[in-house]
Structure formats: C-alpha cells, structure tokens
Image 1 (cartoon, rainbow over the protein chains, first blue to last red):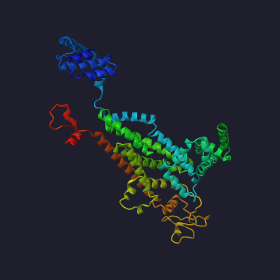
Image 2: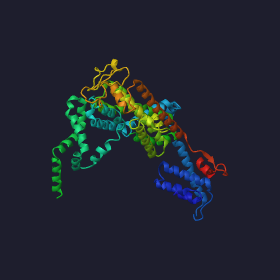
Image 3: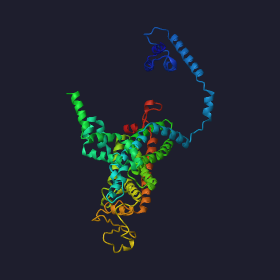
Image 4: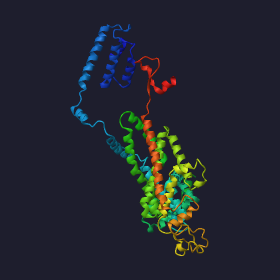
Length: 250
Length: 273
C-alpha cells in the first residue's frame, strides 16, 4: 500500500520495477521486502515528493509525512540491526592478510583432491578405463608373453602402442555387444573376431595356475568366459533362447 | 583419454576465471594446487595401465618396473600438458578436443613406427622431434627388452672373436659383442637374437626408431620431460594471460562525465569509433 502511495506521489520515478520485483519475491515482508521498500521510498523522496498525482485526491503533506516516518524508521532499524559480532570482528582482525600463495594452494589442493575423488571423470575413471583396456590388450597378445623368436616382434607391439592407445581398441569390440540383447550375444560369440579374443581369455584362464595375477584377471572376465562356454556348446543356449522366443511370440 | 582432460579443464578454467575475477582465488595458487595433484595421479594412472596387463599377464621384466612406470608416466604427463594447453587455448571445448586429437594422431603418425623419420620431408619432419610418442616408444622398448634372453637363439657358437669371419648361420649386429644363431631354424630370417639388445637391433633394421643404445634411454627421458614442460609452461602462460584479460572501461567520446551511458566496454567503444 505504501509502495502504491509512493508511486502515486510521484509517478515519474521508477517504483513500478521495484514493486514488480517485490511482488515476484512475495514481498513486502521480511528484511528483503523492507529493504526494497525503503529503497523505493528513498528514490521517490529523492525525486520530487511535492508532486502529487492529480487523480489521487489526497493531501500531499500527509503522503510525505508517512513516507518520512517510514524512511526514518527503516534507517533507524537498519542501523540498530547491523551490529557486528565482536567475536567475528576479532576473528577477522586476526586473519593473516593477504593470504599467501602457498596457503591458498594448500587449500585448493585439498579441495581439488576431494573433487578428484568424488568426480571420477578426470582421474579415477581414467584409471579404471586404463586398467581394463590394457588388460584387454594384454590378453589379445597373451600368446606373446613367452620370450621366443616368434614372439619378439609381437612383444614390441604389446610394449609400445597398447599402453599409449587404450582408447582405440575396444569401441568396436565390446561396446556394441553390450548394447544388444542376450540373443544377439550368442551370434556375436560365434563371430570369428570375437571368438579369437575369447579364446585368448580361455587360454589365460586355463593356464591360471601358473600365474597368480592371471587368476584375478580370470575373475574379471568371468562373464565373458560364461558367454564363451555357452556359445561353444554348439549354440545350444541360442537355440533355447530362440525356442523361448518362439513360444512367447508365436 | 586425454580428450576428457581437455573438456574437464576447459570447464574448470571458466570457473576459475570467474572465481579469480571475484577475488576468491589467485591463478597462481590454482596452478600450484593442480600441478601438485597432477603428479601422483599421473603415476597412479600409469601404474594402472602397465602393472597387471604388463607384469601380470605379459610377464614383463619385473626389475625394470619403476623405469617403465616412470617413462610411461612422463609420456602421460606430456600428453596431459598438451591437453591442458588446448583446454585454455580455445573457449569452445570441442575445438580443443579436436586439436588434441589432431596432435595425438600426429604423434602416432610421426612416431617412426609407420614412417621412418628420414623419409618425412621438412617441415613436417619437425613433428618427429616435438611430439612425445616417438621417444616414449623408443624408451619403453629399451626398458622392456633389457631382460631375460629370448629362447630359440644361442650366442655360444658365435663368439665376438669370430666377428670378422662369421661362422655360417651367425649374425653379428652389435659391434664388439657376441653374435647369435638359431640352430632350430632352417632359415635365419626369423632369428632376432638371444639377448634383448640383439633382438632390438634386429627389429631396428625394420623400424629405425628402435635401437639398443642405452644412452638413448636417458635422452628419451630428457626429450619427453622437455616436451611436457614446454606444453605445461605454454598452458600456464595462456592461463595467466587469459585470466588477467579484462574489458577496458573507456568513456564514450562526447559524453559528459558521470553519465552512466558514457561508460562502455573498450571493445565496443573501439568498434563504435
């Protein structure tokens, strides 16, 4: 109401904007509302309080009195309300100023370390990806793990490019089958390229007793081995799936 | 994987630029914190990459584990620094990612595995010296092949003393050292050598990049470190310059002092003039 009064007292000033904002915020009411109100009133007072809208048949002095009272009250309240906490003042005074580069660096280091742990995109996710993809490449080259004349060149290729290019290989081989259904995985298993990889996995699992580390890898590839076994029994699993599908959707 | 770095650091750069302008952090402290955090993470990354796959499955030479991790970590750091540079060089992360992929492919192409260095014409040959993959491959091959002997070849029938008049079937590819022969092979075509050095020299006849010279290893470390440092310092420079850059407040010609409309950003004012 006071806003409207103030606006009517001087429509050339810009209270409608503040009024709309207070409406948007659900104000007046509360400290923010009082602040917007006082700002609006102050703006009106500063402009030309003696100009009164002709459509508003009220004594301009009464309007000005009300506005002045509100303005004074607001100013007094705000002055009383903003009393700094002595402990906060003491804390602020005791703070080293300016904060050194090292102190900032340590604080940022802690925060970035926390972010790095919580957000796996940058490092943790890459670690997992490197781990899995490099194991994949090593399994592809598993027959070259013995140092013989036949495997000399293969060892060069497994030493050099795979650790540096873990992002290249797996897209074509694993990601697309992961999206397809179990029925399609059966066909995928019988694909020549994939059967080679799975045979490498099978080879690693068969000789697991010689390498303790290979046992842990076998656990990682347990799912792949299961699929390989299912497909190796002459597609029996696939036929079962097909039969079920035919029964379900004749 | 470095493409992820370009995207993440591009987003982070924009945030830090805003924070710096708000007076919350300084660019130096951010770079210090990031560099401190980067080092252990890169080492962990390379341990994840080579430990189980290389030493668990492929039976790499275990006593050289620390060297392989070191050179691999350096290579990752060099590529990471490259990614950092591209993350701040372009405001659009897509451009940075594309640029990084270009450089990665160039590193692969000019690593010496596909095209030998002497066959590359200038000025493209410069890529052979300024990208880290060539030196990484060279170093990793030396580290890994310096291990137990390769089965199927023997050095005893080919002593170094007979190098001037080599016995039938013996190959001498290292000056002053024993030769080798593969008694079970009818042809010596696929006989690479008994020791790691001999094998590297034999492979090096096909791929000129590969060498058994131990001095090359320290040179490789130095080159990768230098390349990584170059990209890192370039990143720091670009980061500092771009975070310090701000619009210049100028007064519009002809406008009075105190006029709010007279104050405008420098670039716009210049365009208006």
